[in-house]
Length: 294
Image 1 (cartoon, rainbow, N blue to C red):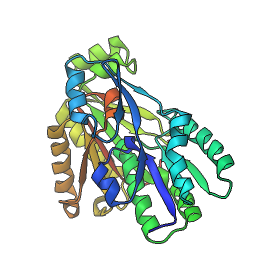
Image 2: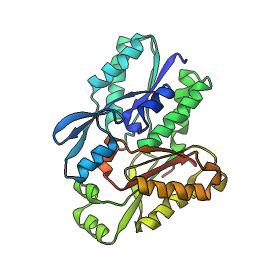
Image 3: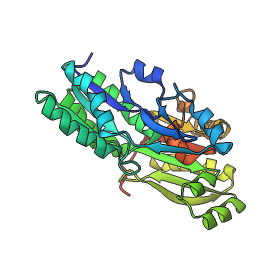
Image 4: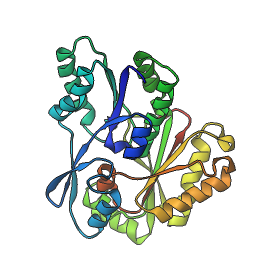
């Protein structure tokens, strides 16, 4: 057992069981479903699949940032127990939660001046954020000190590669991330945008692919281009989705091209925080690779 806490948020899109197994702690995110406040607590209160079904039935879903006070209340028990803390936040490129965590940490440092508190911007999202936490847990278990692990996360975080695609643009249009005109044209032409998380942690559209079949093939081509060791890649692969069938297609193609990964790909639901923005028809692929530079 380490003498420090390794922490993140529920938007790392793993599972409560996985977090317990790896001794990872997490703060819940806030979501508003049909006007009612609830929690993204990795599916305990509401499952991501249920949330997506509600969205498809016209229920309005929004997110609400974790407040400074909520972070302070979350951090305090660890520090009171005499533990140092590394908290890795959801990317600042898609959420203001990193700033809230930093402000809470400053308050906690005044209350607990003898404790070390590191707040790290993951520049990651969904199960790519989860993969970063998984790799950090491996390093912690190898015996890295709190200072060494905080430095390792900062140095390595851009080597976790994120690729997403969406086959349903309706919620991108609704959320204002795609104009109504562009979205309508895209739907008519059966456009499936391929996106990645860039070096500043922002979700960036990279290619417009026509048809689901082609975008499934293209996201795997991106893995071949970006992963460590090309076709010989044997590192960890995480996937998350709001469409299990499409996720199955991506997994099958990866295992065909990378037979050494057969049975080793970890699958998760895209959690409620991220799903409330992407909606249905989304598949995300995460792996270790060349450092993100754009």
